[in-house]
Length: 340
Image 1 (cartoon, rainbow, N blue to C red):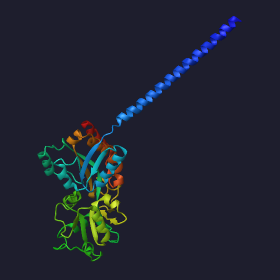
Image 2 (cartoon, rainbow, N blue to C red):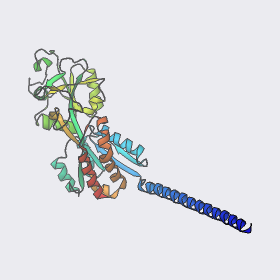
Image 3 (tube, rainbow, N blue to C red):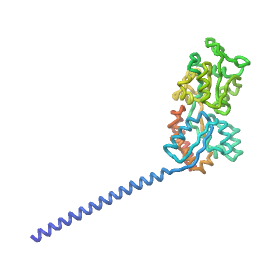
Image 4 (tube, rainbow, N blue to C red):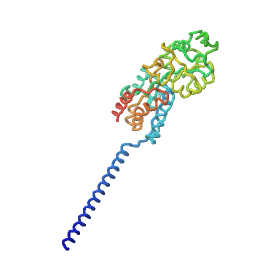
């Protein structure tokens, strides 16, 4: 009887010991899991370093909708303590601010000119070393007309060039629609476009008109919104600007389909491209980074990394631009990662 009682007590003791060990192991495992989770959360928190400060961007009015959308998304979703200010003075006007160091980034709807590169050097900035050129996306120069204009919905590139050239039809540059095609109305064409501050003007003047004088009667404007308004109110108006401004105002104006030699092509995200049907009026748009500022200001470098990693590839289409192949954006990011 005593033996049986001793065995029973031994069994109970072993059960208690085993339960205690199991409980201890469970507690240890729970503690380890909790510690690991906490460590992971801490690591994630430390990786997503919060920064603050200003990023100053100015330049192209054409690029403005894209860069403004990128800036807004960045400030809301990524770094709410960073204040990204985006202006739209125009490509040339933007470079005049960028060259002396008044801005961190300068948007442009045309490539930087040699004279501007020389001016950068005079201000102690070497292009390619202290200034980085970044292609953001592709834009399609778009000719737009009034909604009531039902005759000029399709034109050849040569017709566009000729009508905008001074002296093509008469010395006064009073051009009638019937001068372009005999069966069109005998009413005077009202020419519009962005002014000389804009890269779009320079692209049209230098690349499309090949630096020949523009028609004397052209009405050039600083604001693209003014151009949209003027064309929407004038049956005989025609204007040129970036595809994005047309996309956002389709209810007010009509895009002219352009025949580059193989039939009329409508500007769309599917046709705009350097090797696509709308190639004749396709151009890249840019932003230029002051690399010295990117090294000195964490918020500038962080923002421009976001621009190439997410902003431009994800928001270009929504803003009326055709995005570049992803490997081009990745190459820019790799270069920026070398900065810091």
